[in-house]
Length: 236
Image 1 (cartoon, rainbow, N blue to C red):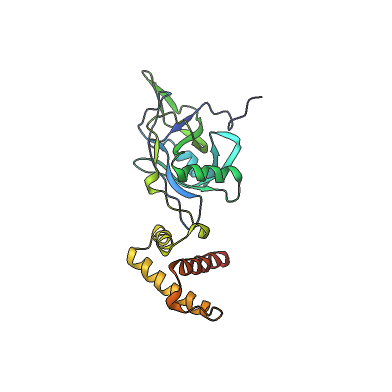
Image 2: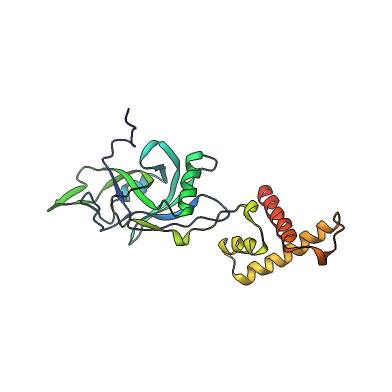
């Protein structure tokens, strides 16, 4: 039995220059372009500026799927807006959902970077120009992360991918500094934060730990600091 895709869409139109950013404090959040204007895809379609105006006036979010299949719901797309490049959006992968986590891990590893839209053409919203179909009015149904985008050049800039927060993977203070830098701190701010929190953590740890400060290893300090950050994040 074939699997159903969203609604009665024929295919998706694909981005060409998507930028992805994962928030280090909110795993699964990212930004990108779901459609790029004036870019011909492998179906011979080109999306024109203003094509999503009706949708943006009616919807503040749409489902996010994997490969356009309805049973592959992985999150939602919000903060959608048109600019001179195309349709920009904020993606939020659903925390705890197995497929959402799979998608996140593939994105983090650089194995998944395609984005596509599912849509219906509104009446009078398409015109043929030779072999090219120009789309001027579309009803956006969903945004998908996809393995094989219609535009072979549609790839995410995964160099901008932020590290997710996992205290268990922190082995040194340098690892903690990287997380703080990914969260937006400068190098000086991150080091200052490390120094201050380390002093607080080690001071509190000394109350029940007879080991002198001078024999505490960097690993001891990293574990104490990671534990502090983990407990703080859970309480926040």
